[in-house]
Amino acid sequence: MLVPPCFTLVVAGWWAIWLVGFVFLYSVDESGMIKKSETSIFADVKHSALISKLLWAYLFIGLWVNAFIQAVC
Image 1: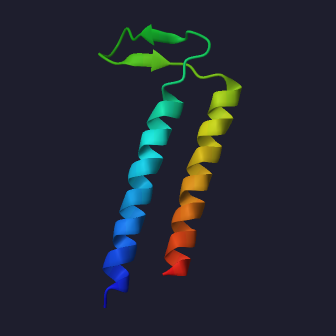
Image 2 (image 1 turned 30 degrees about the vertical axis):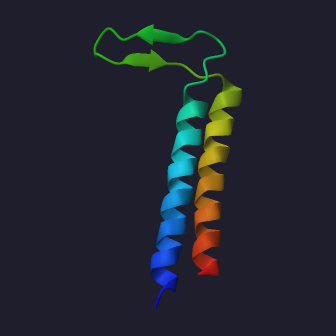
């Protein structure tokens, strides 16, 4: 009876750690392409091709590890 709540905590912990890493990766600005938007209050972020690929890979890894944790459960 304790397995589902325990694995729910493990998955929640994984997503919390993953989200912090994703925010750090998203905030990388190697080319100085953060500009004030003309139409919104938010900035426009232009990532290089490398950072874009890393973001997609990080998303894939996050989903993969989540599926692995659920499979172990």
